[in-house]
Image (cartoon, rainbow, N blue to C red; front, side, top):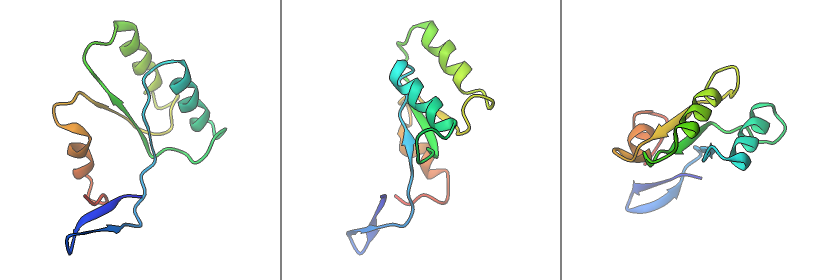
Amino acid sequence: MLHDPNIAGQSVPSPIRLRALSPCAGVQSTTMALMAAHGEIAPMPDCAIFADTGWEPKAVYEHLESLTSPSVLTFPVHMDDGRHGHVHWLRQRSSFIF
């Protein structure tokens, strides 16, 4: 559960929940992403966040490109290169509280 630290200086539970998968483009995380997209494991992730170090082999980026096709994964995949961090794109969405 997300928390809003700005309410009276306390961390108050928020009803907003975010289920994110953190794929590394390896065998296990790819399997989990595909199983979730096909409803074989629940709950369905709201998104996936790939933390891009910039040092992955070309094959990893090609694999991620094939996974991010709308016909493969039914949830968005966000690539974070570390310049802005996950909070940057989460704050752009008004439904998230930080």
